[in-house]
Amino acid sequence: MLPFDRVTDFSKLRRLTPYRPAFGWHRGKCIDRYYVEKFLQENRDAIRGSVLEVCNNEYTKRFGGKQFAKSDVLDLNENNPARTITADLSHCDAIGDTTFDCIICTQTLLLIYNFTAAVHELYRILRPGGVVLVTIPGISQICPTNMIGAGADYWRFTRHSARRMFAERFGSENTQVVTYGNVLAAVAFLHGLVVPELTAEELDYHDPDYELTVAVRARKSVTVANE
Ligand SMILES: C[S@@+](CC[C@H](N)C(=O)[O-])C[C@H]1O[C@@H](n2cnc3c(N)ncnc32)[C@H](O)[C@@H]1O
Image (cartoon, rainbow, N blue to C red):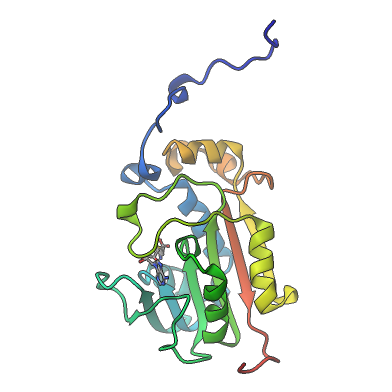
């Protein structure tokens, strides 16, 4: 006998392929971007001085306001005309120690096989007192190759793995981790529904068991100088 609460009505989402492919990016703002931008808005105080961002400097300009003095863009992808520094974030010897006050590293560590080395480099190139703002996916479809640039879609993270990988380098007292999302936002995101298709209440509801986006704010201690 079937259980009385058997769910049968998935409506348009009862399908084996996503309602829209590729995060639905062609229909509006992707749901993970809502959380990335919410995190940056909540941490915009850190975007100041000399700022490094990966791929482009859209978030530096948008959230840094008048606080940032210098903007650099790092990419391993030599076809990216926006880059000012061509380097592998997991091995970027060409960038000197203690160069940046802030690094915005959104949706990138999933593409770097040796993400631990990248965290060490982020630490090394930050000035004492500098902050790295990181977002990484917890729940997501695989990134289509044509949306990636360099690297490949290697990893998903949780708040626990994010905390350990940053706390091991920056110290637990300097590492803050938050997550965003809930089951409705996750299902919608996997089907390529976009931000206007959910309400703000639905997007903002936080369920720690459904980590759509994991975000890290890590500060390099002022008491630990060059290493
Ligand atoms: C999906 S974009 C994310 C950054 C972008 N600002 C954003 O928020 O969407 C990922 C970028 O990381 C770059 N990338 C991938 N692996 C890299 C590596 N090992 N070192 C530096 N950049 C890398 C890709 O070429 C791409 O430009």
